[in-house]
Amino acid sequence: MPQVQSQRIAGSCDDDQELVGRARARDEGAIRAIMQANNRKLYRIARGILRNDGEAEDVVQETYVRAFTHLDSFRGDSRLSTWLARIAMNEALGRLRRQRPSVDWTTLEPVASDARIIQFPVSATSVDPEKTMAQREMHHIVEQAVDELPEAFRIVFITRVIEGMNVEETAEILDLKPETVKTRLHRARAMLRKNVEKKIGPVVMEAFPFAGKRCARLTEAVLGRLGLGK
View 1 (cartoon, helix red, strand yellow):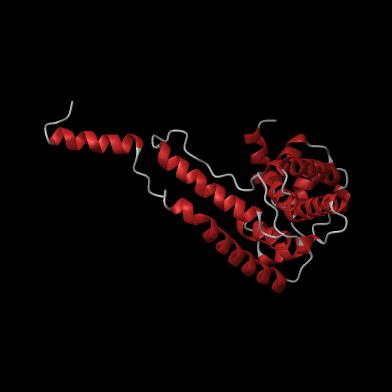
View 2 (tube, rainbow, N blue to C red):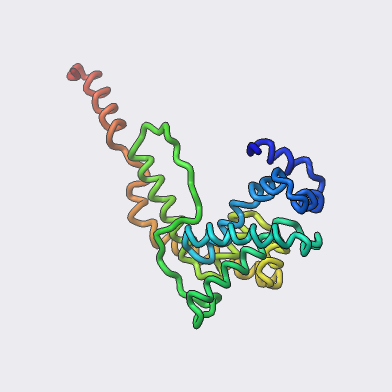
């Protein structure tokens, strides 16, 4: 079923229970709608824990398999997206513990990673390669800074800031008190700000590039006004 049609199905449901009911009846459109509405959120949560793109995709796939084969356990006590996020969280944490069984995930030191959490769009029609390069470098710094937050704080930051979940939803997914969510988010922001400021120094020097076509254009314009141009 086309994506547009699946989105219409998602929008036509008054509540999660109706969509889940369709999914229980193996309605392909409903299943597609659920996945399209939650793919990014589940991927980012899994990616935030595992810091590995491939592992995160596996977690999302496993999450859906578990969810769609156990829909009878969804009682509607929480939102469907929250229920799915909790499954993804448990699956990702389980994989993390199997990878590092002797390490407490809440106390891990930041580990550098080449993978990315946030995808920042860059205009394909840009005619200013110097500016585009500077933008990409700034995006890379922010992505890396988020990636290097300790897990306990990174996951709260991802769920609250990047995915826009409220305090109660985040607390439910992470099995934390709302006050703990607020505290960790505050600390995550402070660490992120400090990390970005530390990395940003060398890049700031190139933040307002004036080279390439821009430089050549201005030079030729001045030479032309002086009667020295070609």
